[in-house]
Image 1 (cartoon, rainbow, N blue to C red):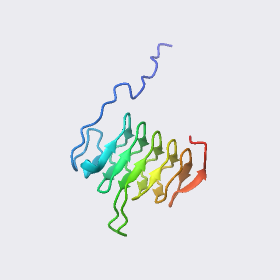
Image 2 (image 1 turned 90 degrees about the vertical axis):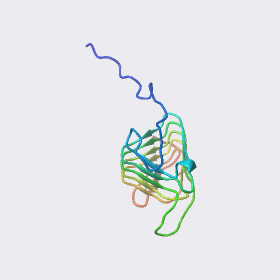
Image 3 (image 1 turned 30 degrees about the horizontal axis):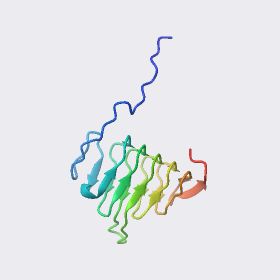
Length: 139
């Protein structure tokens, strides 16, 4: 077979230009950009919305599926607090992460989950609300 080996999808990764309330070239949006920190070689899916009013930090090698919402403030119940997505965690498509939540290193959050509590390092969680299904093993 003459198949070429698959190129690492991060070989040519560069930090995207992030402007207040404007879609990046990958079609995700951040509000309150001054309070947003983006790690190295991250992958954020199209149509994801990030409200960083009270701080959102996404560490290195994090993957976020498309159509996710990450909130550091909730206007419904007035909750607020920084969101931290630690190194190498994964957030499934169509998930919502609420204010004050930390998703641990190497943790996996299943698609369509509502994350309103911290998820520890190396855990697998999913559901509405997200529940920890397995701890200590990651993906």
